[in-house]
Image (spheres, rainbow, N blue to C red):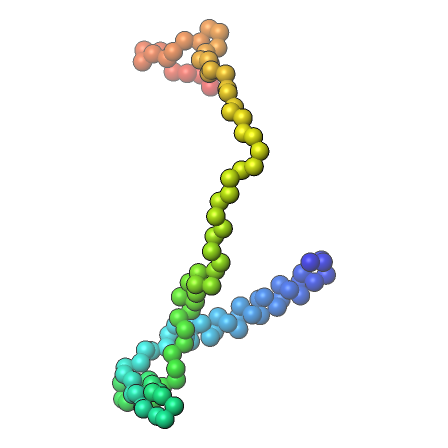
Length: 116
């Protein structure tokens, strides 16, 4: 993306976040349906959600916290691992030697404090 479009893209994304945050807060705070009425019509059954007083309410919103889990349902299957092509050589490292410097001895409990 070129440099002159970056501020515009940032502004658009910020506005999108502000607009969708309000609807997400409304959906999260919306009370659930207390009951439902099923009407049998000629085209099939229709369910109407009602509140505690029996008044019809709007259809429930999709849970904003669970919508990201829907991506898993439409995600493609993970491809199978394939065998590497070509030749593989073993790496042999030399044996580790103790790293004692000249004149250094292991510490003892009776040694004086170490100078930094």
